[in-house]
Length: 446
Image (cartoon, rainbow, N blue to C red):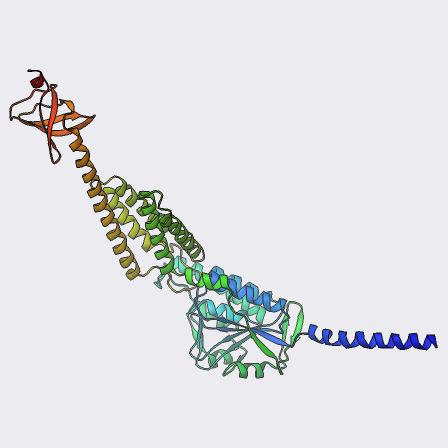
């Protein structure tokens, strides 16, 4: 009887464990899903990091594959290489989809599309035009262009070989700046399929087998869920500050506020805000192809302005600082070496430079006039305290000349209009503006 009771109790315990464990096991098994990324800007370090992080996060979260909707005019070659490497090394399939209609995968986008496990395009899209050009879109010197072209073409051929795509057709996008529509790209085996939209793409992907780093994977898109991978807070923040216009404005404004703090020690707020803005400017610039020579010239210009305001003179420091500031703004994102692939021009617009420079010079002019006025007032106020002080003539007063009073040289004239010889002791009788009226000290004794 006891044995039977014990057996019953054991059955009850096992049943309870099963009831609890089964839901947990089911909950532990995530529903099949695919990650979705959107790249719709210039290829640069911020978008490159988002792309790489998105692929890593998708693999970590157990996504069956990743779809990247791509629409880009091109970008930086180093970032493109990083994105291609991340795609080639991905443990899960990466589908690059040039979408929506009207989108393009130009320049750097060609390399990224070619590296996909499955390359797809929507109707009315295009890919190609990946031949090297200069930093501003101009033609390169023949020797430089030949080297850059061969480097880019070799890289694209290696991608095409690994993905079994049409090497010659992709080679022409570099060597001849050829661009293909979606139908031409499909016919030439540059891409794998054309899809109207995301739903049509998923339908056509069902049952397709691709090779990844860990072996072959057959895609099952039946009832699969799409989970977008969004930019995190840091990436969104960098998207804002990593803009040439924003970085330049932050740098200029931060420098101006620091100058205000240096001229008025103890205000604290201008210095703290200025330092923060400069830090943000450097963060933004660090995520762009910045030319540090240009940044140095901008900072030098601000330093020269500070020196001019510190000791107003003939304006040499101020003029030199203004020239340095403007030249630095133009050079801030200038590239002296040609890119391996054509990239959209990145730089501070002429309008932004003109507007910021106008504010910069207006601010400097107002500070200059304010400081000069303040110093003149202080000068005149102090000079009025000299009445009754003694000094010595450094030139003969006939009746005008110079005297030394309170260890300073002053313009002076004889109080009675008579001459006073050099080296005579004098007494200040009156202050007329910045001129002292004096008389001989021995006149008091007489």
